[in-house]
Image (tube, rainbow over all chains, first blue to last red; front, top):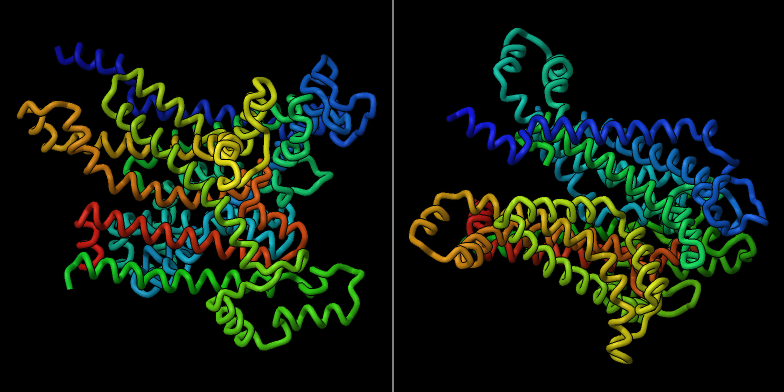
Length: 287
Length: 319
């Protein structure tokens, strides 16, 4: 009877473990495929992404140009592959830079508490006074447009979120008896933090970082769309969407394919992040 | 003083440091520009006299503290300075632009709430296929960037069906129907993603309330399911939904920067982007100041509503 009920329940909804594995595999595979396409762009791109061909201006998709060509007759597929490179590079490096800063800050705030926590947490909260996009735009207003500035802005925007997750996770881990045991054996705070607390507290931050990568990618594409992120002639997915806006009705392929590439990359990060969250952060610290 | 009143006072006081930090960041926009901001603004052809005149007009030849105090003082008297390209007073420019951004964000949030909350309730109380359908909408809404959704909506409604204009704007007072026709696509673009977030929050908030013992008790008493959902579950899920709506206003304001540029709406977001491209820093400052102030005020109102809806929040904050 028990076994029958269990089987019926399994048929209705997949187990959380299985669903997290499926999401991770699907997200991971999509991301790996996109990363391979981006890295191998110079080898697999059928044409030079910057090669202008007057006879091919707004050319419809065909066998030679499967995604068609743009306002300057450049091959859209080759530009999408190169654009994907920039988008992935900017979003991943921005989130990685944010993590590099957030992990020590969150560790210090969560482990030492009191004034360290107040000083770090309140300072980082100030970043949250601005909506993310507005803060990015403000950064660019000061430092000028470009993909490096966009990456710095994205890293700063996500710093308080990642540091907060690291702080909460550190608080939970620090309460464990093995941490008190290490201190009792005479280990220094630095040693306890590096060897006992940090490795066990990192899980939720990695989960949150992969979720944020999806938003970072959208933010980078949005900034490039506004002309504030990656600058021409470097191909970027957001920039391609901005370039093709005027010819949308005559040549929709100029807009459809770069947009689909962004959606696929965002989906890959979202699935991977959600799968990781379900598998490694069941307590929901990263939320 | 009652706890509720103490909560309101405390929350309003908390807004002061937020406004202060925001004002510092906005003030520093011009001052942090690498090199000489005045030369950057005026370009290579500017004469030395022009540079000195603009530097003086912007107060950049004074000490930093004096500059800040004068800037805040002028702002509090309603003097936001001058646009360096059109020479129009920025107070006037903001008065023209703000209603557009207000209309866009308010309509988008209204549509997002009107779609997201009922769909969330439906997802929480309906069968598995409803859950799957709404989950599909959530994944779509979260993964599709608003600017691409906007482009696709233009392609379908302005390009293929030719029933809506692709971009442009007329003020509501001049032509109400025309204004709404221009607003349909920008509002749909912004509202879709927001509706997905609100749906997800409403669904999980209602689902967790429906699992509580008092709901089981109400069911056992034979109370109609619709009354349980709308009279009890929704009321308890309210604070979570309102909190997310408040947070998402920030996302909407950020999204408005893109959507206004994309649909040629003369709002504050477009003013900021044009200002950056023209190195028109005073205008960028005023635009950023306006959007950030709206966000801070909305966060304050959201917290006060949550404290009113759920007195336990006010109690926890004051004890």
